[in-house]
Length: 104
Length: 251
Image (cartoon, rainbow over all chains, first blue to last red; front, side, top):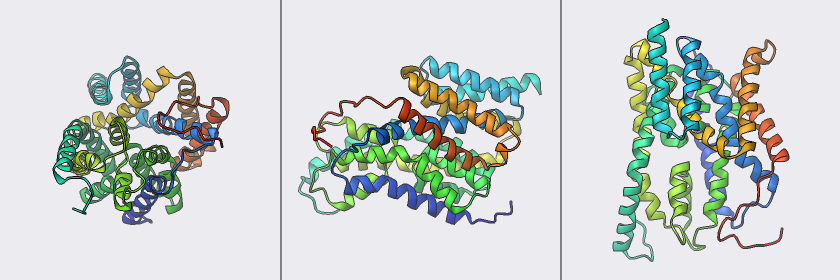
């Protein structure tokens, strides 16, 4: 791959920003964030980001969109029923493997 | 080890109980970071770069977001913004931890504990009563952090030798984990459920529509996160949760 940007600089940028986010409040802040908007925003952000990164990427990551879509549905059902991180991940992988065995 | 006013023996005991708490976390981390490593390999990272990604990033979603931006050859500014947004929740956790630190806890401990804030390490630190003991966190970190970083490097290495059928199957592992985080939260909270559905739809639409899909994926994620997150915060402000020891000061 012909990178116009340097991966190590990418990693340094990531490291600096994530370090600053984690360390600034713990070193400086002695009180809770008061703004209800900000607290709500920070509460919702992780779920929104993860949802955005899952769809449609999960469907396009596999060799066939059908197996990716099947894994998405299985993953949603399994996590709805209370399966943990690791079981859901394994189920999704198995779904892709078996679906592609059938259709490819 | 720096001098401290705690007895070395009790500090060692606390460190050891931290290690115990860190073992299951480390096992989980290994599985997640291994699949992250496979994704990193697809983007073109070497095992060393994968190791650095996880040793410095300490976040599954945040690191994955970084990978998508590297794949898109994004600008450094876009990457900084994305890191900020994907890791925004750690700001909140850092705030919460700051409330539980002894005022005379030295800066170096605050820096170290802060650097290793993850969902799980935050959870076990906050679950202990009283002021936060950094040595408990260090015990857990000493197990969890190596699992996380080496897991990623091994994922990159394994990704190189996987047959296509297995590579395809493993490629959804990370998304399965994302689902296992968002779906239970959506089940327990209607506002989260609605925002997740809107996010799914918005993301699918943006990648399918001709003009919108010209916007790089990372930028799309940043913009949509801010838009949908802000809309959620306005429409469904969270209830002021009872955060235990928070003193009721007026704003």
